Length: 169
Image 1 (cartoon, helix red, strand yellow):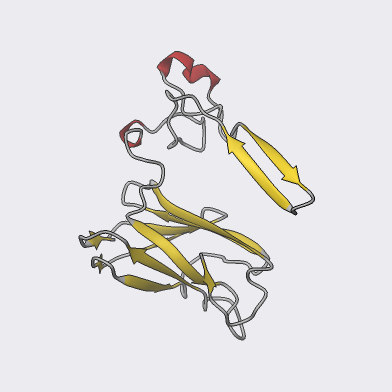
Image 2 (tube, rainbow, N blue to C red):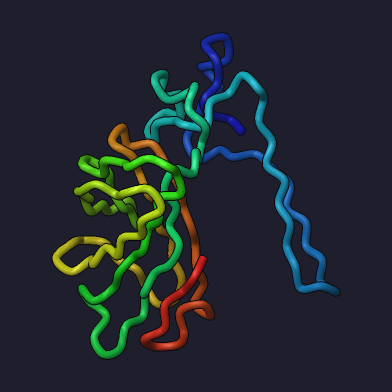
């Protein structure tokens, strides 16, 4: 990974410079990726220069407190504004979602609010937001109050082909 370097190699940072190997196993119709990073690099980086976000470097890249468990991306009828995302608090404590956001693959964000009790799920209606969950595949990211990724999922056009069905991640 060519980003999030410690100060000694900060000049080498660049956004969107993930390093890795991708293997294709055609007999199994399967892809496997191996992403590489030095231990001194930070996973939380800015999108402009690829520099580390200092206050986030001691936080795991995806701590899993709250998970995206499902999404309705292809509702019956008109899609616009009818999509929803379901999140789940997997901890034993309530989590204050005020200031948290859901983001799409184009980095459009929708604010969250409220308290998510221990073990509670919440269905977030995206009506009235700029979030776009296209039927041909997409990405959904959950960001905490600091804007750090807590969880993320992706789906394909095949996942979304059945109108009115919820995708479970």
